[in-house]
Image (cartoon, rainbow, N blue to C red):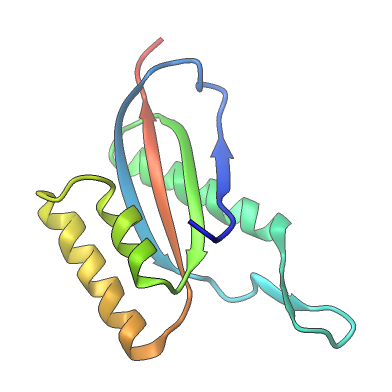
Length: 123
């Protein structure tokens, strides 16, 4: 993929994966900080809290249990398409979300959080 992948792990990873979904979101302000006048640096602690909170919230919203999630921060349309569609070319909601994200990238070229979320089966 080229970009770092940020993983959200859980205590239910021994259960089987029973489904998956994707999420595309804007990068919230404050994830990048300037240290000693240098270039912006990613605040990894804050990123971890944001990704865990977002992953858990998304799972709860659809009454699922989060197995794990894999996130990238990217402005690469190919990665947005690949992760956003998560192997489901027939997913209309996925296609609409990806198209909206791609239009935003073309307009503003801002980085996005793009995640693949996996749901856990029951114990």
